[in-house]
Length: 356
Ligand SMILES: [Zn+2]
Image (cartoon, rainbow, N blue to C red; front, side, top):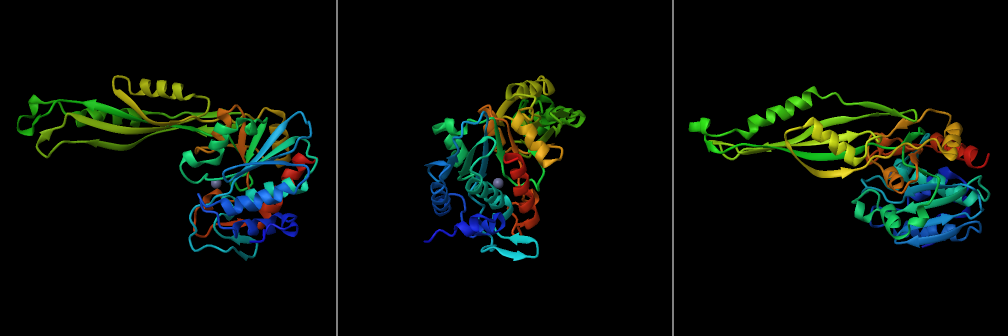
């Protein structure tokens, strides 16, 4: 197949977005798009290129004092009758337009057209973001080639509709158990009812006041929610066990250990078992490249409430943020689309920042 990412296509990020969308790349099927991207980058004299699996990395070596990563995933969720792309007025429709081929197009366009950025740049085009973490290209690179991820700031070009979302909240799920003693319900006084005991767990959840925390101007709203309750033995048995699964979404000023400590305080007197946990990420907007980036975008950053790959960078000590042209609420939707104007704004902003 001839590479559709020709020089004519690469010079226009809008045309490039469409071309990338039309190279189908559902998770675990990114070889063709990774081949096309690698082929483009290998021809650029100011970049050195490496590849692992279907993740392609390219970087400048200009000897600048600081290095910035621009990253985007190449995969999409399964196609839903929405390929090839179509254009209606100012909108490009198709699978992966918003999440996140438009963002990938910005990075690839910059990689080809910006030989002398004010920071050294590392471009990462990675595989398998939409599926389990074990396949995630960033995760694999972090394990096998951590040096590729060394930088002073990482910008993930995930859809944010042109706003800046910095850091992200952590998440922890625990199982809160209550115990009792079985008995026949005809002689209930002989037993202890574990489901009744769960009432106290629910009362504590009802009374709980979650924190709102502002860090570097970004506001994070915590939440503590029961997400499942189970218990009961039979229709005539006083149950001896009940469990309530609780999910804490915590601001990134808490570590996972501190989050667990907090849950132990809330549910003092109960048995807790951690069933799932992922750390948050501080926004880290005080570094010079981040401050200059915010100045170029010209709007206040917001805290990211969900968990994103930003946290993978934070775990490596690299502050990271999300900034991309797509509308996040359209990600994974059959009518997924991206505004052409947002792509043009995005490329102009990145140029203001990187080539002042
Ligand atoms: Zn995405």
